[in-house]
Each structure stands twice: as structure tokens, then as C-alpha cells.
Image 1: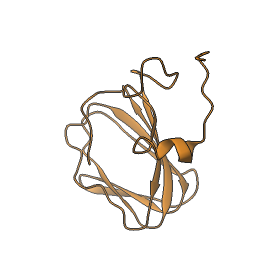
Image 2: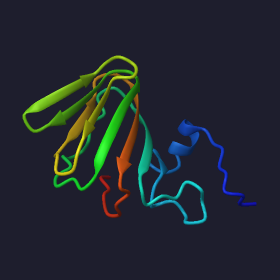
Image 3: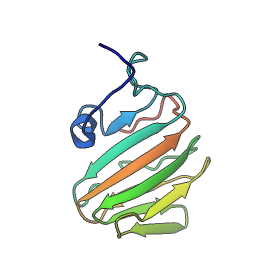
Image 4: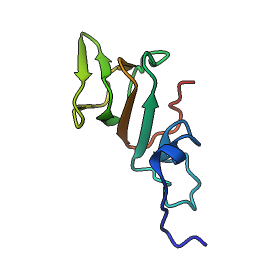
Amino acid sequence: MNDGVYVGHAAEDAALDRGWLLGHFKDPEDPRHSEALEIKWGVHPRGDRRAEWVRGEERTALLVLISGRFRMRFPGREVLLERQGDYVVWGRGVDHSWCADEESVVLTVRWPSVPGYRAD
């Protein structure tokens, strides 16, 4: 029954869709479908890094460190997140990449939810 309510577990649900919990890519009948924003529960082993830089970003993003030690890279700048609750926000047009210095869990919110962004 779809009553417009979804209850889940971030780590379990994230494992089913590359970490993404909410966004345009969920079924339109699912309460987690949104074209306004995307939410990701990212679990990264030590040494995990983004395969290639995101260039020409069309969204704004917020990344919050839940646990571990996580490094965000921007042109000419690195940001180290090492205390639970440390966060970074970047806007449209800001190229970026990342690396997990330690096993890390991060929560990412991006808006709007734009089809076509995927790095395998």
C-alpha cells in the first residue's frame, strides 16, 4: 500500500542504489522520488576516491561527515572533514572530487535533482 510514507534504514537502502536515498531516479510512485533534490548515504572504505573529477556542475551540494576522515578537492583547494558534523557546501560550476582518508560515512544533499550525472 502506498500511503505516501516510506520508512527505511539509510545503510540498507543506500546499498540498493549506489548510496542514493532520494532523487529523480526513484520511481515516481515512491515517496523518495524528488526532482527538487537528491540525498546520498555514502559509505567509503579507506582510500576510496572518485574515479574522475565532476566538471561543469549544475547543482549546489552539501556534504556532511558522519564518521571517518574525508577529503573534498576543488580547483586550487582541499577541504579536510575530520570531526563528525564537519561539512562543506559548493555551488553550481564548482568542479570537485573526493577521497576517503579513512573509512568514512558522509551524507550528501544536492539540488536540484538533474538526470545524467553518473560516475561508475
